[in-house]
Image (cartoon, rainbow, N blue to C red; front, side, top):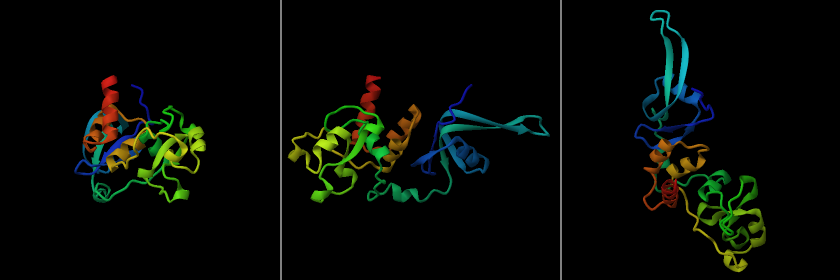
Length: 203
């Protein structure tokens, strides 16, 4: 079996709340240091070691797509109602499905930009609820105006992701079982949940 060593493992705390993504090497270290409380999801890697001098058997570590680790109490803050994940373009573009929220076109990351719905020069804030993904052409046309002032229609209302949604948005290649696990932590009214379910239905 040929493994994709760029595939990330989803790490959670002891209660099963998502923490973030780690590499297969970091996961193997957690297993070897007995820091893994339990694992779920599919087996995605098998790390083989040396031969046991007594039993003559090869040592191995089976790594699953989702692992729960010890001692991650800081996640209580990340799942509080007052927590706001850091704003960055990678997660923003993923939130908006790499679509321009003005013309509706789908673009590569290099062709997109962060637009402030209420511009900074009009006291707009650099917050999740005031930024959307825009192609560079639309962003240039809008300039320092609001969508209404520029005669442009905003296609979706920007929203602040929860920590679990943010973890999903930061994933570069999220497996089906990881999506299902993360989605179970999304709010029921989540636009992201609805989009994923629509994509699953179409697929």
